[in-house]
Structures are given as structure tokens and as C-alpha cells.
Image (cartoon, rainbow, N blue to C red; front, side, top):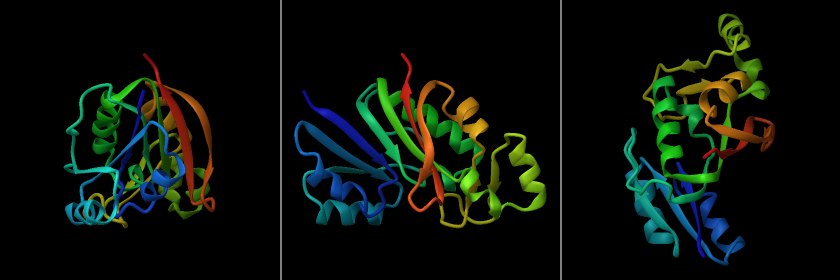
Length: 179
């Protein structure tokens, strides 16, 4: 039985390319990104992984309940509030019941970057979006209070783990889709 894993927002494959050599048995890897040039590069240079271009809005070209695990590293950090809810609905659509979803967010570890008025809203559990550039780009930023992630973004999931990711620049959330 194969296990199907999707990296949503794989870019040039900086993470997924290493997974294929780390977990080999019965794993089928997929990478998806809205940057067509990055996906073309991946298709040309990384073997044994299925890559596809997704739009900046859902849907994915995958069947419902297809993936056992989906991860997105620093993707929600660059989306509007509307896109947050559109994409989490789509991610959960293609994730199997009891499947794992792993995301990183700008949470408490990056709270020091907020302006005073933003911090007040953040402390009330509100998503903060700085969207003065094209959505999805590096400087389009979203900050995620833990209450927002638990009670809004991942409300259809059981939270398994929440903590700092990398060098403390982001929070990592591991959750399981409920039936």
C-alpha cells in the first residue's frame, strides 16, 4: 500500500527533493506550486516525484481524499485571509480522513515584528495581513495568532503538535483531519 504525500508550495523543490532519498518504501511524492517556472525546473531536475502547477486559488487537480499527508512550509504566511479559508478547505478536501496536515505560520515567535495597532489585533486572535504587494510574494505577509490557527484555520482538525520551526522564525502545526 502506497502512502501519498503532497508538498503544497514546493517552489524549486528545496524540501521535497530530500524526502525522496530519506523515505523510500511505499511513498509516492507530489509537489505543487503556482510558479510554473519552478515546477518546470523540478520536472527537469528531480526524478521520481510528480509535480504540477496549481493556480493561486483552488482547486487542485487531485481527487478528494487522495493524500495521506500534506505539508506547506511558509505558504499561509504569504496569503490573504480569503485565500487562507479557500485553501484550507481545498487541502482538507484532498486529504484522507485521519490524514496529517503540517503547516508553518508566522506566530508568536514573530510577534515582535508587528506594529502597535497590529499587535493589539493579534492579541485578540485576529489574523494580521500586510498586503501591499502581490499576494503570494515574499513581502506579502500574514501573522497567525495561535487562537486563529486553532479556532479558525485548523478547526476541522485535531491539533497534534504546535511549536517553533527552524530557527524560531515560524510556528509549526501538525494536525490530523477528522472524519
